[in-house]
Image 1: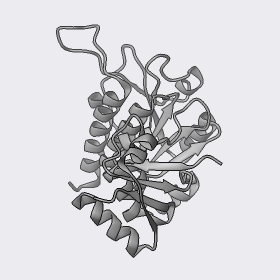
Image 2 (image 1 turned 135 degrees about the vertical axis):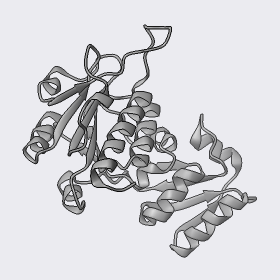
Image 3 (image 1 turned 135 degrees about the horizontal axis):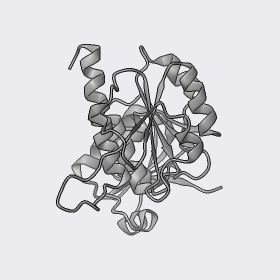
Image 4 (image 1 turned 30 degrees about the vertical axis):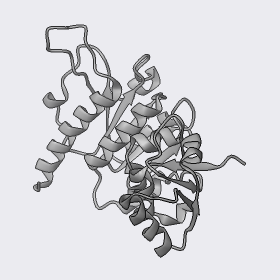
Length: 249
């Protein structure tokens, strides 16, 4: 059976704080830095085994990333059940769906932004999507320990279910579509972003109640943002409108 590892202070530290039961063994060098020593103390508090290894072994496990002197052998990533997540929230908010986003760096960055802007959950199709690999976990900088990630068998079916629960589906689609700032995004929203090459699939486009795009306004009209950068801007605007509607900041 393939072993699963986390690397880096943020990734390991957030799981230690949020769900220490996922960690099986903490791997550290014989001369840990102060920040790693704090993780060692947390691991001991949670009765997690600690193993001293060479920096060479850590680097071999984490290639090509810098392990920052710490790694953890962990249980497989704990995907959440969407129905359970929906039942646990006080009010409907924002759900983010990734349709065909396969680059692990982009997925990790998107998850980090989603956690920052208060997204309720992220939907990932079981096929044609990046898995929760060490690269994704490192790019997310610990956000995966805090934000529910729901793996769904059929994204189209899931979006139809959410529409029945009065969520509006917002599709990020290139073309002459309104900017996010021109739309009313204050209610329950499922924002769908697609791959940089193909975008959102046609079957999902048909389900969209709203469509949005962000055309270039600089001197280079052919410029474009990658999906992670665009998603951050989109989530900022949705969050701004949701906060105003809820009456708090």
